[in-house]
Image (cartoon, rainbow, N blue to C red; front, side):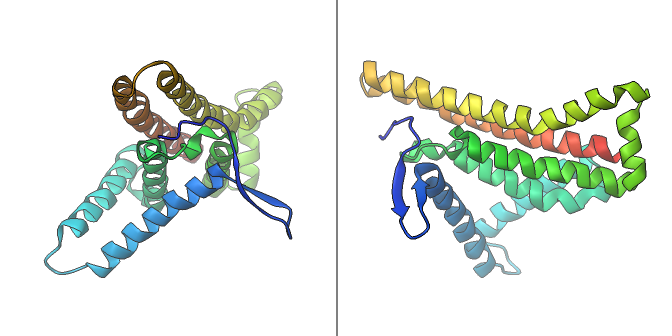
Amino acid sequence: MNMDIGIETFFTIEALGLDITNTVVNTWVVMLLLILFSLIVRWQIRKVPSRVQLVAEMIVLGAQWLVDNTMGENKRIYAPYVMTLSLYLVLANLSSLFALRQPTGDLNLTFALALITFILIHYQGIKAKGGLGYIKTFFEPLAFMFPMNVISDIALPVSLSFRLFGNMLGSIIIMALLYSVIPFAIPIIGHVYFDIFVGLIQAFIFVMLTITFISMKAD
């Protein structure tokens, strides 16, 4: 297994001066797998569902159930985003099981995901309260709280991105150390905890925080 913890350049597009890193390549791999799964499900939709269709329906219903019970049925519009984010994070965090470096071990990617959540949070706030009404919330409960409320909101994507990045990078480093000092059989046990358990937990935390923050802005 390739346990390199660096952000290496796979290839360079000289005409544009772009370095394509392993994070970008592995992200493409994860997205390609999700797209292929979606196409397979689309091709196999039948009145009598196949096993693949049943799995897909369970995923969709699970996302809808999660949104309904945490945000309310009137927020089901966010179910596709929650489902897509969940699937991506789970697959990305588990990608090291297939000899890939987890894309979520790169701060650039986790910050991009947190930024999407950040935009959705403020969009929901403006949608629920209107432009002026939303601005007024930054002066609550007292006007002098405005700077602290702004800093709190700015810190949100930073904390979201660093939480996921830090945990996944920590797993990558620990597994690299295990492979460097312990025979092959022992690190397999480490994969069960650091890749599967930690990966699934961190994906769940990121998704739940996203749902929670969007719901808070809607109140």
